[in-house]
Every structure is written in structure tokens, then in C-alpha cells.
Image 1 (cartoon, rainbow, N blue to C red):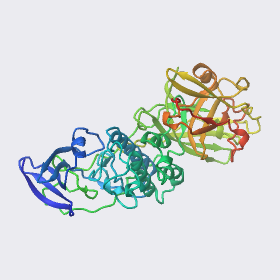
Image 2 (image 1 turned 90 degrees about the vertical axis):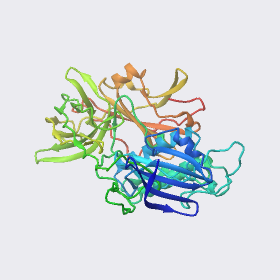
Image 3 (image 1 turned 90 degrees about the horizontal axis):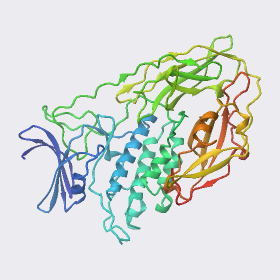
Image 4 (image 1 turned 45 degrees about the vertical axis):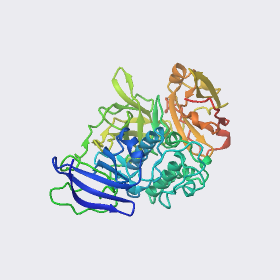
Length: 505
């Protein structure tokens, strides 16, 4: 194929990156000419991934490696993004790095300018010029590559780089993206572990890091105040190349060495607003809220909703709490419904109603409008508290070849079948790494009298966890939910569970 050079995107002593147009088809690509042999590009050409640019050609020419790559009209990542977009970027990066590490490829130059936000809302990891594959028996790298400020200590000749090197740079990158964000405190402990100078003290795999960011519940509902839904577009930095009029003009900066696009690019379609949840209502006097499911809400198979709870004590409705929830649905004689207990937030006597909206993913779907429920009259302000759980313990048993864990306590018989329990799991640093909410009835039918905690990963051997239990009433006018102690006293915790080498979930 023949190409017409349109613009020099990058030029140095060791490489030249051009924006080119194929003469016959008119398609636009990026052509990279790198001195020496870069065998990693041959491996990448045979290992496509949705978060990597497509490689259309890799060849040797006059002692250089010539790569023809997909052109991506996207821009580098910016700082202080909305939390939802930050989590999406982190999840995409974990996915692509896990894929690369599975192929034995270490990127060695993770940084914001090498991560593009493409028009489909997902990232593309670019620039593998410094990438390598670990060598058996090598004690240190023979070439010192990477970017100062992002490169791990082992990249300066102290040891051989491996996947933990990318974890270090990923931690620096994500910490930089968090700079100034109002939610940054939630993630900094995880990122500090990524950035430990000692590779042995970092996460040992991307899977471990991903687990620290994205602990997911199965069974009931997860309170997602730490997973706020944000719809603002992700910020970008960079510059715009001056292209001939017939070329597609990138809207968000340039791809610093990437490649092709089939004809002119149009802006992605605006997200479509989801329908509001149908028939939000209270389940009698249980303090449980119900509404019709919106299957397209949320992402990754988890429906998500935003809600607001109001109380009117005779002086007008006042907002009590607002947050978001994600999880599964329930089936009853009313149909397919989403169910969540608000009993823990019923404190002052009055008439309560809630409003609920379906949460979009910000790419295909936008949030719906809010739908209002009927009214529940709460009179249990002075009712006695539910009993405090006593004798908290871990129960472990094998499920096939894996060890699974349950939270149990010894006074479960003192509660009604509809009462629910919010179990929060803490790590040694005091972070909540997982939580699950089951009713007593569900515990007895599915958990052998306990709540299944699907958080440990096999790589976590040696880590320790403990949990608390917050009972939530299904009879709020007769028994109040127990408040979560703040701060949590030592007496409220279970004993520590230290994971063994053969543990899993």
C-alpha cells in the first residue's frame, strides 16, 4: 500500500510518527518508524483487545520497525474527572493491563498522555515503544526506559521489571487523575499501596488491584454512596494538529503515535435518557421501598438507581438522605421489582416518601427523571432498638475446591424473618472493602444462617479482614433499626480472618 504523508506528529532521534493517508482508500492511519527491533508489536498484532489500537501492519525495514496503527480521534486524560468516569477509566486500565500481563507484556510507560479517551467512552492504551517481556533469570533490565515521575524504581536498574512495574505507574497515573477531586480520599490508600517503592509490598497482580477498587456484591443491594453517578464528560488535555481540510479532525487532541480511521469522524451520539422506574411504592409498613426495574440502567450487568428520601413532620417535606444503589432485582406477585430497605434512615416521626431515578452509564444512556412514591407514616421514633448482634464469627467451608466465607452471629433467632443485616468488611487499613445486605429469611435459605461474603481473592493470602453487622428493621413502627456506630468501637467487630494460601471465593 502507498501512503501520503499528512503531518509529522512526533519526531526524535529514535522514532518518527506520521499521520498518513492511504492513497487508494483515503483512510487515515498513523505510521511509526522505530529504530531497532521492537518484537512486542508483532505479539500485539496477533493479540487484539478493545482497549488497544488496532495494528494493521508490522514490518522490518532498514534496521527499523515500521508500524501501521489505527488512528483514534481522542485526547489524553485530564484531572479531577467525575467519579463515575474515573472508575470507568480505572476499570478499563485494569482490564487491558490484565490482558497484556497474561501475554507476558509489560508496558513500562503508563502515564496519562499514553491513555486516550476514545469516542466510544472507553480508553485506548498507546505507545508500546518501551514495552518488554520479562526474561527468565535476568536480575535487572538492560535498557532503562520509561518516564521520570511514573517509572518504578526497578526501571532505573535496581531489578527486572515485571507486572508490578505497571501497577506502580498505574497508581501514579490514577493518583494524578484524582488530584483535586472531592472523592479522592476513598481511593488514595489503594493507590499508595500501588506506589510502594518495594515491589513486594505492592499489589502483586492487576487482579488484586482491581479487587481493591471494585468489590462487587451478589445477592442483595449495595449502598453506593461511594459510587456516585456523575454525567459530566471527562476532561482532556493536549493539542490539535493542523490537518488538511479533507482529513478527519480529532476533537480531543491528538493520538501521540496511533493510527487509522475509516473516513470522517462524527461526534458520538448523545446519551438517551432512560425511562423513570415504574410504580415506586412502600411495601406496607416494612420500611422497604419497591419500584419497577429498568434493565438498561447501570453497567456491567448491575442495575443502578439514584434515590432521595423525604420526611414531612407537618411543616413540609425535608430531604433526609440521597444516594445511589446497585444490585439485583426480586420477583414477587407484583412482578419484577427492585427492592431496598430504607428503615435505617427512618428516625423522626412523620410521613415519608421517596423519589427514584434510573442511572445511565453516561455513554449510551443518561439518567431518567425522578418518579415519586406514595407515603409511609412512621411512628416508631421512640420504639425500642432491634437487639445488638452478639458473638460475631467467621464461618468457612469449601465449595468445590474453593473456600467460601460467611458472617454469622449467635442471636439470629431474636430477629424477624424480614429483618435485614448490613455486613461491612474492613481491611487492616480500616477501609470498607466489601458489604452485603441479606434478610434473615434469605440467610436461612441461602446462607446456612450466615451472610456470604464473596470478597477474598486467592492472591490475598496473608491479608486480614473483620466485619460489623447493622440490623435493619422490617417492623420500623415497632422496632427501630440499630444505627451504625460512628466511630465503630472495637466491641462491634468480629475477630480477624487471615486468609490462607488455598482460600478463594
